[in-house]
Amino acid sequence: MAEPLKAMYDLPFLRQFAARVASAWAPFEQEAFIRLVMGDGWEALELKGRIRRITHALGATLPASYPEALGVLLAIHEQCAGFPYLFFPDFVEVYGLEEQHHERSLDALARFTVQSSAEFAIRPFLMQAPGRTLARMMEWALSPNEHVRRLASEGCRPRLPWAPALTIYKKDPSPIVPLLELLKCDPSLYVRKSVANNLNDIAKDHPTIVREIAKRWSGHHQWTDWIVRHGCRTLIKAADPEIMALFGYEEHSVDAEGFVEHAELQTLSQEVRIGEESELRYEVKLRQSQSAELLRLRVELGVFYVKSGGKVSEKRFLVTDKKAAPGTSFSGAKKLSWKELSTRKHYEGLHRLTLVVNGLAVAETNIQLSESVIRSGVE
Image (cartoon, rainbow, N blue to C red; front, top):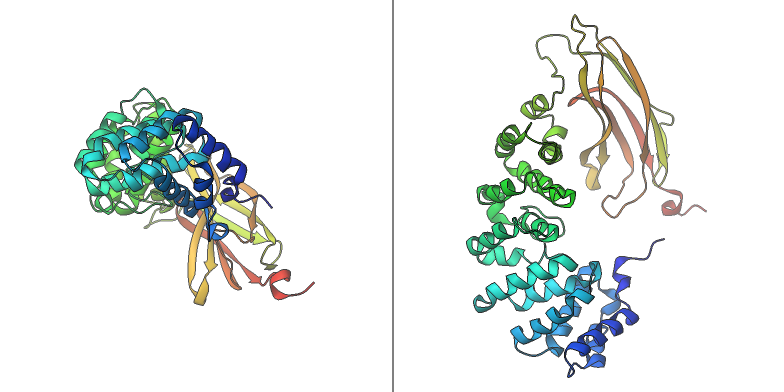
């Protein structure tokens, strides 16, 4: 089993970092810092808890003046590159939110994000002073550095994972749209992914806004088209009619025969245990048409997971996205894992599976999921 990320903050790491701090500020008490970090409860702390513990230990051992303490970190930050050093921007978030430090703190975040990432630390500043902070982020969107441009987009995502939601932009995302406009043709894939994720966040609360943006942005540049496609993924999964039409997917007719003549979804075993894997086979036959134009198809596997208390929650997995001629057939296989994940816990029960073509379920089957051998106590 892979070692958890939190394990990177071990004694050798802390000693090396403490030595770097002392090289920039001689009075730094290295052993006191390490004792504060690895004190009571350290082993039980998860990743974000350990980052915050290091931040507090720095707050207790660096100069009492925030500008002076920040100056020490700025003096060594280029030597401290990578994910482990997220406590640099976290220090700014914890100790630099006061009004008199606002500009200094934002300057520091723009520098720290190049070495690690300040996407979490910028959010309290947006909550506290949204207009002032967003104005600075608009400047960041024009930076020659891709990490700073990404911070402009990633930091204002309404629903950034592992971070508090930005309620102001969940309610009204219009203030951040001009920022995304500046980045809609960014040459960096790193930035484009962030812009697309921001759009996808907005789509969950304001699909109309994203529909309008998608129509306006589409067809101008391949980089922008990629952003639009990726940013509309939630709407595509929901088979939003306008978005499906925008991307050329064949529409299901409600007053006539559909374009799917026959479909099957089969499993090689109707019963599996938690931790095992199911192998599924599918087949789709398209109806003949007077038109020879190829049909754009998005085929998904819908899994209705049984949840605690007997509730059911559907999740869809992409099977294939392709074009096919009317009257033709295609088939394939799909594996479905029932292993436990940190993001998904499995429960016993009858799970319904559907084959979905362009948002419409065209075939289904069932799988009975039972307790794993280990969980049930059988050797």
